[in-house]
Structure formats: structure tokens, C-alpha cells
Length: 128
Image (tube, rainbow, N blue to C red; front, side, top):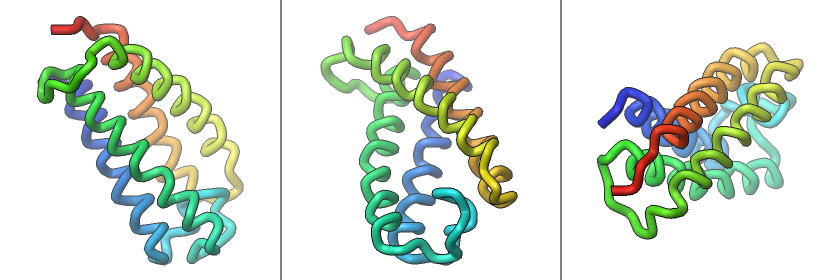
């Protein structure tokens, strides 16, 4: 498995776990969603819960691109990774603009790592 693959899978799994912890009400809210709440209110907890399956999809698609898993159909791997790369590039900007120092310290590196690793995997992916 490529380095970019390991990084992307790890980043997506961390994102899924982090969002699940936020959804469960752990006091990590200063690191997400603008950082205005220690514990997220119900609507933001629901939003965090909605992120979890997308993060798991990202991990699965990154694993496919890196040769760790064989998902079908492989034709969707490149566009999904490209969409994630663009999404995390935008997320990088949003996290960088946050008033919350904790969100910037957590969100900027995570978004950067996911944007770059997804972009690298998308560019290098060749269906097997």
C-alpha cells in the first residue's frame, strides 16, 4: 500500500472516530464546527453523525486506490477521491479562518493531509 494510501486511510478513520465522539457528546466541540461549543448542541451532533459514513466511505475508497481493498465498481474511485480532495481543500480554508485556535490546530493539518493524500491517490489511480 502506498504512503498516500496509508495516510488517507488513517486520516479518514481518525475523522470518522472524531466525528463519532462529537456526535456522542464528548467535550471536543472547540475543535470543530466553528469551535463555539465545548459540547455540541443537538443539530451539530447530528451533523457530526452524518459525517461518519462519508469518512468511512473515504477510507474504503482510499484503501481501494492504494491496493488494500477490492471494491466495485473501480470506475468511481478516481472521481470520489477527486471530490474528497476538493472538499478537504475547501475545508482547509474554513478551518484556517476559524476563530477557534483548537479548531485551527486540529482541522488545518487534518484537512491538508486529506486533501493532498486524496489528490495524490486520485492522480495515481489505475483500476486493476
